[in-house]
Amino acid sequence: MSGLLILLVFLLTGISLQTWLDLPVPGSIVGMLTLLFVLMLLRRTPETLQSTSRVLSPLLPLFIIPVSVGIITQKELLNEHGISLLIILAVSLIPGALVCAFIMTKRSDS
Image (cartoon, rainbow, N blue to C red; front, side, top):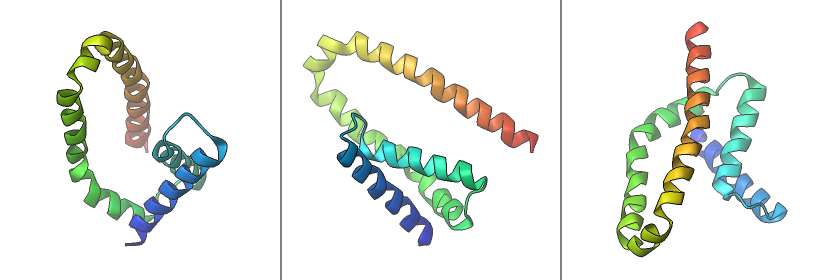
């Protein structure tokens, strides 16, 4: 339960920072980056956060459902900006894949 509290604290921190600094990034992303920064400083993940993450990870595919509904309901918007969105998606996947690969190689080395 304390792992969930940690996630909620960082979510609220991110939303607060986003509102206070008027950032063009969603508060949830700011909170996630803040959590990443703190975990990098700690150089370890607390056990409570690890156990909460193990429980929540299988539920991640449920977050795809709102995106799927958005695709269906925003057909005219996709017709107008679909190619641009596809290019943005492809370009944004590259840094994420590189970071994941880096983390996985570092984890397998230890």
